[in-house]
Length: 254
Image 1 (cartoon, helix red, strand yellow):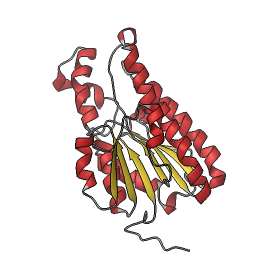
Image 2 (cartoon, one colour):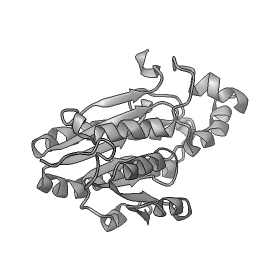
Image 3 (tube, one colour):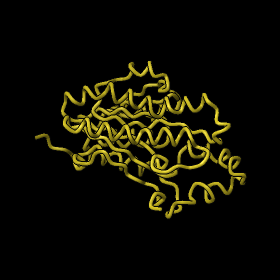
Image 4 (cartoon, helix red, strand yellow):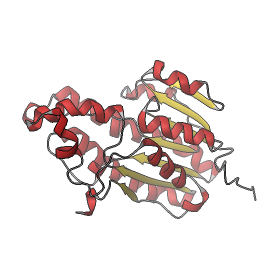
């Protein structure tokens, strides 16, 4: 039996991480590289991917993940798949742009399905695989003005559980991580939209909207999500599958 290093538990594993140019995805890519994995870091933003390419055992791929037919160009011989890429749009349902709704579902639900679909044969052949879907507290709860995001994340939860059931006989696990508001560019960009939708000043958005339901009044750090992702890809999580891990400061405890 191969000895697993406690400091580099992913040696010999190949991981594909989407949305890796910033925020949660970047933190996961960096943590996986530290843990010994060969990382394929994927994002639309080639310029922001560039610093990751300077790391050992990290290759970067700039691609539009909402272009579903183009996903076949990505490597399929991966042992770990982290579906993290996402965008947000804040607007009431009656004025929610139809093209934006469709884009969010393509990027955050259809794309993960296709990436899983094309990666599972390699995982099955090797008798080992890990799928981690970065969902959200909005995969477990809804909020006003985020119909597309909430719909996509709820769908991702169901997809993740189905992967878990089908993958179990082949040594493949699938889990969701459900952060609250994380200190990322995605969250920062929401502040103006949230202020407009709720009719409040931008200075009040964090306390009045984003952290209103959380018992722990702080943003989640991307590195915290990365550590939980690493756990879900390690040897101690072999029996952990089909689960959703709330990391939301007590938001979903209500």
